[in-house]
Image (cartoon, rainbow, N blue to C red; front, side, top):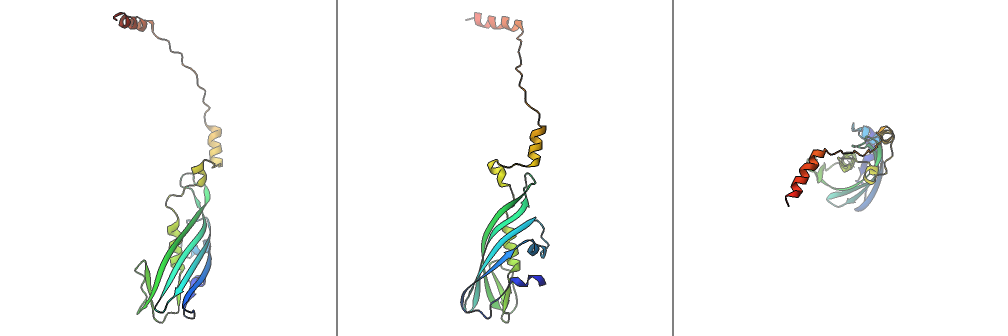
Length: 179
């Protein structure tokens, strides 16, 4: 985690009020967490830190794209993602991040590392079923689809001539003669 120093937000020298931080996230960020589900990624992360006298409020928001394979066609495509999250930072005796909505930092801490929260937020914003947008609107053109069309059998409909056995006509005549 040494290389993620850019995701440290020093709050000790900041005045009370709101402060904005922006981060650009790409695949090198995810390699630090051992996450390799994305072929590439380009995500803009915005963190608004509101410093209060006894706590910090962090409002995260991200917007961008991740390149992933489609679950139906296995074609790579850029999937747009976005999301928001709120985190409250309180101060106490020792570090504690067991709660999802807030963390506790020691009183002598002067900065907060937001890398883990950014990672979790982005990964959880990717849908579990990733479907290429071209499938939904019918515009997907891939080499695999072209080969399927090229090698699919051509349909030639031939009319089947049904010859009816003349004995059936005789039986039908019996039914109509009763009336």
